[in-house]
Length: 212
Image 1 (tube, rainbow, N blue to C red):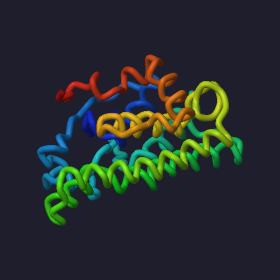
Image 2: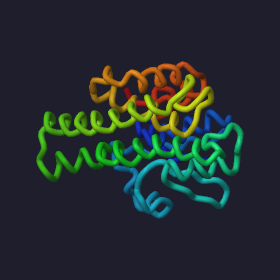
Image 3: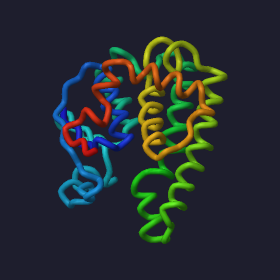
Image 4: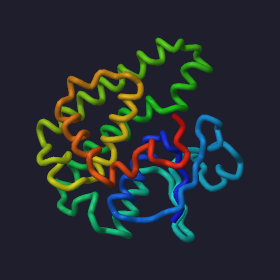
């Protein structure tokens, strides 16, 4: 397997966590988002979304982090990241999508660049935008964990897709200087996860393209 990704991309980070949890080896292929390498014609031919991550597994080319993790769960089912029980699976997806659909899309690099480069937002306005959507989204995630979370991870004593999404989003929020103290359940899960070897191997600072 090959994974086209960028060390600081939270979507790439999700997939790296899943691969590490499953003990799957892969070739790391960096795509520097800061240099707009994802927009190169050769890469767009592989991934029409012009983003990361992109997984190549034999003849299969697959983008979108949640689709990739679902594929990995189907092809390498142990340990499972999406439960087989209908309600348990729905709870995991509910929290995962609250991050992947509500928080991440409005705060990713291309959106922040558009705010500044096209709409003329200042650094302060960009940061206010980012922190606003983190506060709204994390409030929802915190409530979901209060109501339905249990165990050391988001849902029980084994990691799921929800943890693969939560940890990178917290990392991004911390990097942007967001106040996460109101989200005690979120931070409890995060601190447990980042102490685990698989999560540590997937961390941005451990990647070959890491730039401080």
